[in-house]
Length: 346
Image (cartoon, rainbow, N blue to C red; front, top):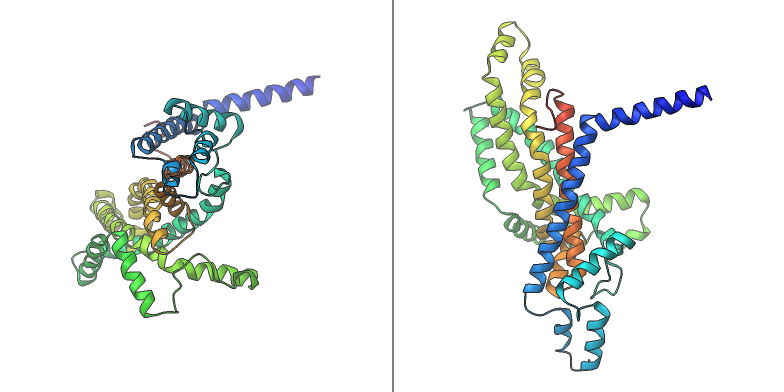
């Protein structure tokens, strides 16, 4: 009995310590805020869908082979004959009680199954673009700061301004023209080749990676240009600080001064931008997926909007908002890890 009581007390103390932990409290608070954000985003998307003229069934009236009786049956089947508050309330109730996002009007399938098919492709593209952006922009930003006002810095600034001046859809158009000129070097249709199922596991990875090249570049160029400029500016601010001059006066190697002392303090604002970068990439994925026929969430959402597929649009926006909230939360937690002096509550 004594050992059981001791283990119970230890477990109770651990639970109390977890609840009082700053990170745990912050994560719980952010989750509650995210739930409110998701609810508001869903309500706004539902309202916009309803305020736009017509619905999915109205498009079927243009088909003379579908009788008015059948159209009325479809309205009842999809719940479109109910009032707006009833439709929205029933949809939320099914989510909370059954985890059911409804049925797609167009695909006649569960909305959840469609989302689970498309989300991995969008995340793969966004994460690959994020990795490429940071792997290239951070080193070039450091070089530009170290070589301030020299020829290298000026060339990098021209590249940065040029990259920021090209929106994602313009970049995608240029890449499509480039793919046409160099055809069949770069594939632009879909995520895999026709013979994908016949390839080995390593061949399948290479095949998907080869199809990702152009969409990833289209997503990365604008983000890369902005991040390079921010890295340069933040590092220059840190390099002008007194403690950096003191470290140099003590005879520390220049590489140690830059990469250990200066970069460690300049990286904090960049980590803060990580969540916004992910948000921007997920938003830009709509354009890249449409241009390059990438089977992701953005392309599915755009097609659902065009077809007035109400429940699919709402569920897609919920998933997009959820991914953005997760990205911002991860950025805040990474900032805490990089600099323990930072308090999450502030």
